[in-house]
Image 1: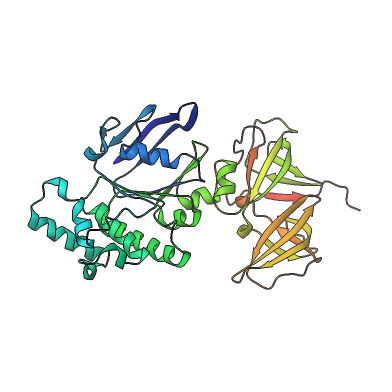
Image 2: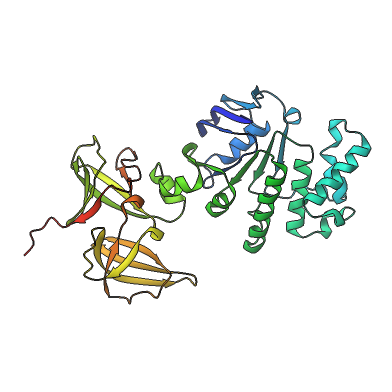
Length: 375
């Protein structure tokens, strides 16, 4: 394990910023630390770099406890949100600055500067001053400066947040390429879900000082372990239901029931539950569809977003589902049927935020049954 945080906790006076956080990063892995502002990301970064000594818990680099080691003695490279290039130094001098304290021979130092400027495609800007560079070029110089000393861990602390969207996407691709080519173990800190999912091998999702979920991006997206992960990591339809049976687990939405074979729970019947469904997992059929995984409703809104339509369907009083659709949408006021695949349904207990279901096996049956007598 290249980087390991063990039960990291930190308080600023009476304020608890980080609470018992534990996770690790394997050699060569790119992990995204993801969460909203104020969730504890900055405190974790400062603990890793040595600028904050945690109230309790340990920080280890390559198995060595560095919790009490000063920043300059840690093999950690960092790129901050704001530019930290020295304005009076050339691009080459900025990159060389990170090597100066490592007793590297001047000739070898110059070779490394050339090597890493070529890596970030800025070898022709070696003698330029930072003020002559674009925002994206300055970011690339900072990347070269951070990784030229070949640190144990590279920490990228919101490195793209100050850039416009088009430049963010280009530089995001550059970061992915550079990380692949160097194999540097990387912690990418961000509040942007799209950036995190596009870049990371794994995500560590933070909320209010706690870890809400750890796993591969697709796994967390499709099978979120907590309601926060379900709502934060991409869009989610959320609605309340009632647990009506435990074996198999069955929940009721108005007059309709969702029956999931192959699952059970020890929660008491009558309990409130919260259900999450991704808009891109849903589909719309004409009204009257008798497919098992379906719920009738009425189209209330349509948003044309260019590459897709967001179709809002009211399926119960006070319950609306947003369905992503690429084909021509139905019309407002039209009666339709929304299909809800069981594998995309996440159910959590209302009180404890405990996930009650895993993704259903392909052979499992999940359906909406209307319990009312049929005429």
